[in-house]
Image (cartoon, rainbow, N blue to C red; front, side):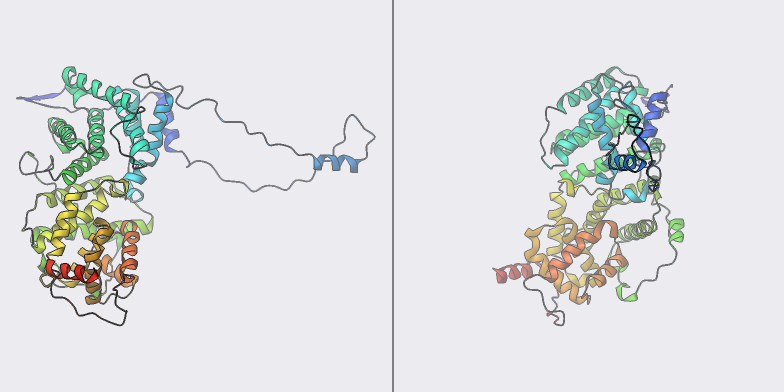
Length: 504
């Protein structure tokens, strides 16, 4: 398909509309239906024993014949539906072993659940066709999917991170070779296709996971240029899942290295921040929610800048929608997820406040919370040390009198459940206990109620927060439920230092 030309810039209108061949289409359908079309299990019918006589001894009595038939053990014979691999009849874009493609399919079947925390609440339309069909016509994409899938099982899942292994290295090198040839000599349709972007994203993600920040940013710069030359993020409307993965990779690099994101920034990006999603209809489906005034603070939005208040409102509404669809077994569209991810996260990246201000503490708390909702790679070994350090510094120098007690407790719980580890217990647990008593929290149900009235997704956050609550109430210096310690006016560094010296 021809590209629309502009001075010095080529905009591509192709959307990789190649249809897979009939054999591959049949395979995609069968892959999508794995475990979904097994049919009903019928109850066993009781049959009367068959009264047969041995032909070699016709004089044998019926009784003896019946006894012989019933006591005979008949071994069941299972006839397979199909001999050989489902992949043996499919022609892929390059000569690869069927076992290598099997790994891609295994990864595809579990990727959403492991890498996407809200997988059960999102409807991914035509996902298999978009991600599996190109294996048959794009060799760079084929090798990129193989090496990233193999690397996931060999390194990321067991958390044994190393740059390469013998299984994935040949496919990595072939991906690099094919992409270089395509970008140097290919036409615009090939260079700027969805599959080329997906292959480059594979290289970017691999560099991020192996800690090669320079290489990750180099690949992401090329990926952002591909998106720009296509005409911007709006041209990914027909493939929102790919765009989400590109943006998530961009955010991950920014968080891990402390750099500026490539998309929607005020310096190099020409695109403005995306608008907030309209969640009104989804909230109406949920119906009215009655929240106890005990957990509402009239000072909540007075405690933060207007831009932060806008993000808080959207994220709070999004969490309410997710909690509703999780409880009711429904789903939201991938477009709603994309709009929320992009509009919230990139605005948080672009805001600047004083390092010791309450606004900065709220921004970092919202950023940490949003990472747990939209990225959630920490459980696979990904860490964000700069975010952790900045959030710790904010909380340990924060004047609690500047904010409502409920907001302070929410920030502390976000840090304890989603950001910090056991090395922070010496200062965090005492402050948490004081904050819980100020908010009159005596049980997990009361804590859960307070968190949900602010911003919370039970599907993601209940388990880690419950562990924090239980360990905090069992902390060595935990007060008895009927004893309220003297509340502190500030959670300053000096107070925390004195707490540590007392413990020692």
